[in-house]
Every structure is written in structure tokens, then in C-alpha cells.
Length: 157
Image 1: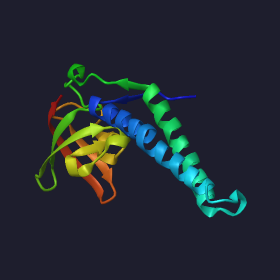
Image 2: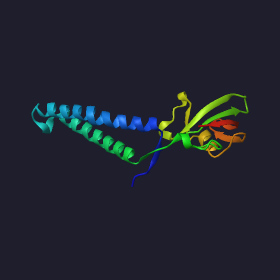
Image 3: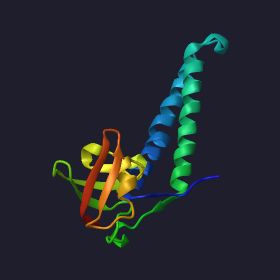
Image 4: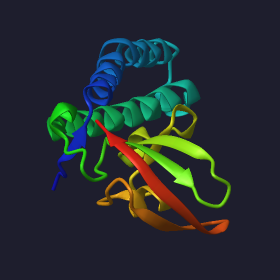
């Protein structure tokens, strides 16, 4: 049974691009490697052939998984997201009440998380705690370093 997952346009485009590259570039490369190994003679003792066939199996498995993801993907219209509370794809400006540091994060699905670019997963300790809260709320996060308090300053897009 397949699960429907929601993606931003950029994330869905990246999935489709990866799938296309696997089908149009990697698949022919592996087919060529199998043909080359087959031409070397006895297949029962041909390690190159066995390795190429194993690589082909792994590639085909990855292609099937990506096709399934793309088939069950739903595009999330970010322009229609409610900014009165924190939701997935919300951009949230928060203030650490311990040291007054200001941070801005975009809440994204786990597969899109990238702390360097300010994208945190909705399943992270901060992400889970932020979800459903409104601007002005104070939240307490059970982080690995201990309990931390943040004030939600602003929610956008």
C-alpha cells in the first residue's frame, strides 16, 4: 500500500529529475556494462557480470521506488497555507528566550530537511513543538541539550 506524501514544487521537480537521470543515463550504462562483461566469456565465473547484474537490480529497485513516490506525490500549494498558525512549509521566526538569539526556519518534510539552508523537519524536536502554535506563543522544546524556551515572533508563507 502506497502512502500519499506532499511536496513543494521544487522537491517534486527534484524527484522527477532524479528518476529521469536514472532511467535515461544510469540504466543504459549498466546495460552496457552487462553486455561488456557477457562478452568476456564464461558467465559462471565472471565477477564483473555478477557485479553488473547486482547493480542493475539495485538500480531497478530504486527506479521502482521513485516511480511510486512520484505517482503518489501531491503538490502542496504553498500560497494557500494559513499563516495564523505554524504548519508544514511555514516560515517561522523564533526567539530563544535563553540567549535572545533570533532564528528563522522553514518547516519541511523530513526528506527536505537541511539545517544549513534553514529547513528543519516537522519531526524534529523544534518542528514538532512549533506545529499548530500561533505568533506570540511561547513554546518549550525538549532538545537533546535540555529544555529550551522560544517565543514565536512571526509566521509567514
